[in-house]
Length: 271
Image 1 (cartoon, rainbow, N blue to C red):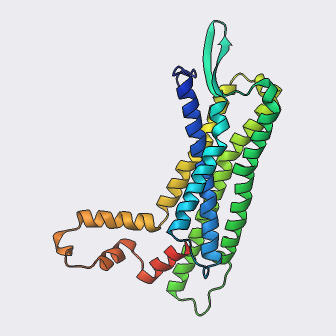
Image 2 (cartoon, rainbow, N blue to C red):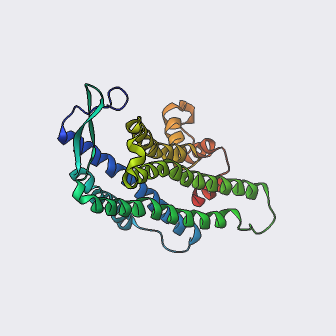
């Protein structure tokens, strides 16, 4: 649709469904990142407070989805197909949100609400959380003589800080062009109407925004954490020779980690 033809040919129902599900997934990604930031803040900055239990975690996940589903309802209701004349005798069908002229004020209010709730608010909150986490992990002095194990723990802390800052930076870089383009398009329409490649620019910035979910997954998986630990454990259990059968799982975990067991626990606790 986007790369080859730039024209929608799949009907109104599928058009509304695709736009709605896409919008929900984007909001879920944003709200999940916000929930993770708050959870890490509570776990690292206030380690003595009780961690969330299974019921609280389930409620938080349900809340993330419910908020995203409710906020995205207008995107499905106002999604429609519109025929655009690109050049003479060449028409293309655009699938997207088109609000009636008499509801432009409501649309702008809705967009500003979403902009504040799904971008400005999360960015400010995550910045404050990760700044406080960075202060706790990076600048907090480690008591006692700095042995090799302590130096490894410090390197693990710095790696965690870089990961958190990278996730926040990627989020801002991916979503800022999307919201910036939308603001210019909706509040200053005369600027983009004259542009020949308006639709192409729209899909490019939208693709950049959606790529944030992929970037987050890569960051979480590639950095050494529980995901990579258990992935290596699964590979060892599947491919290990028969003479490893007498060895304990703790020995296999130690070989997979490549660092002392206490250091591995410290790194996981920090994250």
